[in-house]
Length: 182
Image (cartoon, rainbow, N blue to C red; front, side):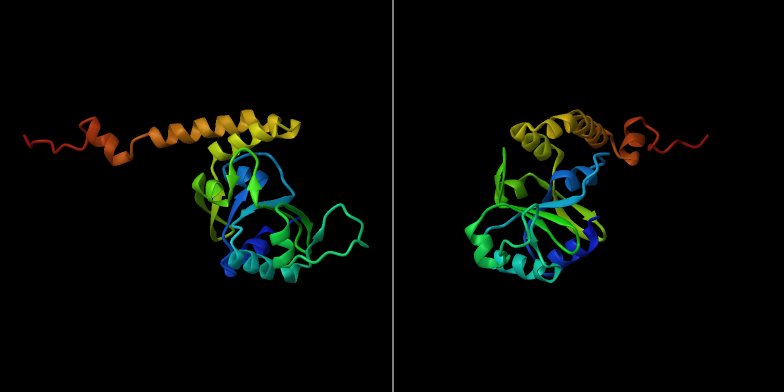
């Protein structure tokens, strides 16, 4: 089980520049897809990498699906030397992406994100368009299976944006006009 609240709090408190991607982003947009990890795309600037390593350190990050006898320390030097990391931590699995397939690095991912409130924190979350773009590019069977739902959610989102605000609708149909008294 992942403690998304503690993870996001640590990242936000440390002022880490990141975007929520993957299954958690899909869930934030209304997907029924269940995820057990938190995927983030992070800014690869030196200061941000240092903040990221410091934020995750209390959760004892270690490489996931690797034998425990492999030495590993998630510090700024390690993150700088790598790009993407699949981690097990005391608060659940966290995947760090320096680049997202089909989109690019942090800047490109950030440009395709929207800000949503997750567990009380305002977080940049990859948009449905970005999720669809990435899942198509990765093209794993599990990604292709969720594409129809992602596309349906995007269509619903588009329809909601097209609907006029209630006051606009009244003005358009004349209900907002003052009626003359008899």
